[in-house]
Amino acid sequence: MPATAAPADFVVWFRSVAPYINAFRGKTFVIAFGGEVVADGKFVELTHDFNLLAALGIRLVLVHGARPQIEQHLAKNNLGDTYHQGIRMTDAETMQCVKEAAGRVRVEIEALLSMGLANSPMANADIRVAGGNFITAQPIGIINGVDLMHTGSVRKVDVAALNDRMDFGEVVLLSPLGYSPTGEVFNVTLEDIATATAIALDADKLVFLMDTDGVHDKKGKLLKELTIVQAQEVLSQESKGGKRKLPDDVSMYLPCAVRACEAGVARTHLISRHTDGAVLQELFSDEGIGTMVVESTLNTLRAATIEDVGGILHLLRPLEAEGILVRRNRELLEREISRFVVLEHDHRIVGCAALYPFPDEAAAELACLAIDPQCRDRGYGQVILVHMTGIAKSQGLKKLFVLTTRTAHWFVERGFSEADVSALPAQKKSLYNWQRKSKVFVRKI
Ligand code: ARG
Image 1 (cartoon, protein in one colour):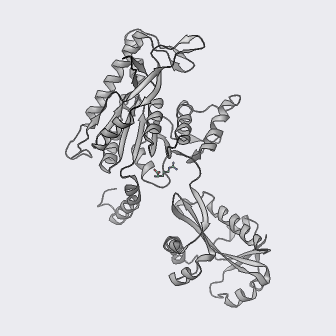
Image 2 (cartoon, helix red, strand yellow):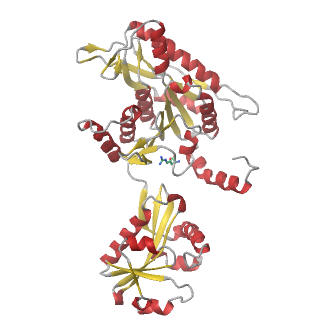
Image 3 (tube, rainbow, N blue to C red):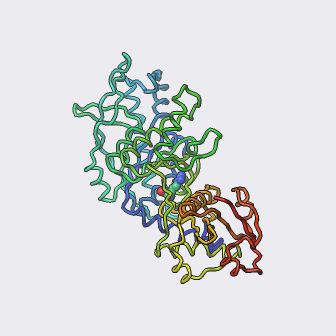
């Protein structure tokens, strides 16, 4: 968004990013991508985004793959590609190709990360790339009688050395190779290197760039957020008799996300490598662009406290301005704060409502139900309604009513029916604003 096009939008947008900039400074992100990104010539754009992340003080470990390049080398040398149970078998000749391919990809990436062209996002960039023998690998060995030879898995990550490099402000670039104490080199998958490194570093984020744009449900809808348990459910849909075939990337990376999350990596993101700026959209917006795997849900519904007044006002003001809600001033809100609940998503207030009981009439009013417009269609309103109904019931109340001018259909869909103003509790009736002409909806609870 050029600053000149719509300055107001630009300023709003730039300010909205500030919380992430603050939250991410000094944090460690491991970002993994296949050799396809380099082969497709897409790495230039990605370089710009990595440069921005590094400039914001994020400690970066990049992990690259080299699958298409290895295949090319094998073909050039008339060597076949042998897989056993989805794992490449690496004999001595294949290993030679792996080393050449990985080396070549690495050099290309280092070259692009060194760009500093004026009039480009890389102007003034000064990225120092670190590499080395950070990964110790071990042979996978013999599976069902087949010796996978130089194919390895991660045995140890040199955390101290990686942290040293990042303390110096360097970006670490890991190739899909590991070394052994006997001086051997092993061919290791990028996902194993990335996952093991993120776990060992206790990274804040692990990001996989993949062919699809995330994980989808059976109907094809993108699942923006998955808890470990939900991710395991998706994976089991495939394993249980193979009823559902997940895209290859999802089968490959989703288990890594679960493994990382179980081991304490706070968030793993699966995003498309085909969308320009996907990394930025995922990291610097609330809703992201792909699938994020987290340990448990980021939503909390809780009683509001005086500290929440600002956040609640922020939600209510636009609705008050539109005349959807009656205006409440700060003092009133502070006085009545104990009546409110707030729904937080990722530590941000995205919804609220208040409950006013009228014990004499065994009824309660549900008021100020508001959801952040950016978070519509996530079912948050329903979550709050169910919660408030529970509170009212626990107080022995039998009826819930709302006064609304615009959202009647939403309540009708949830079992409320229109009632006359005379049905309101006496105290409420006397305060009824005849000019506003709100409709009354009631539901037995
Ligand atoms: N930008 C935030 C983060 O990086 C939230 C991302 C949410 N992404 C999602 N796919 N739900 O942690």
